[in-house]
Length: 86
Image (cartoon, rainbow, N blue to C red; front, side, top):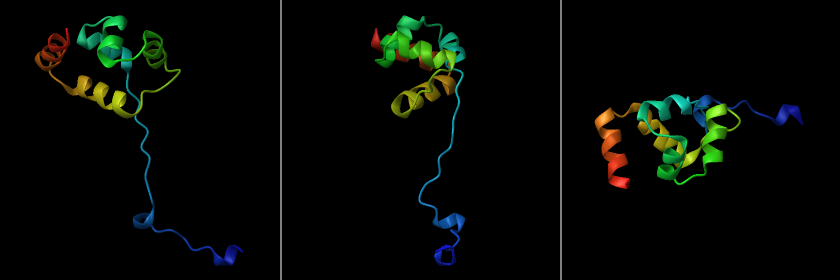
């Protein structure tokens, strides 16, 4: 059976997973928001945010994308988004 297996070239792999770890607490602090405010803004529970901040869980999907935007955005851009929501 092993003589039937062929090596897979890197260009033939079906998908690549890249682990991204964000410092969620630092991002929240950078925005100047409380846990409750950021959780509301993102549409998640405070408990979920706390789990991300302590490293028990990692944000994924749209939450990861939004946190990445917050991390890379300038302060005026973040403030504009915050004031647009409230």
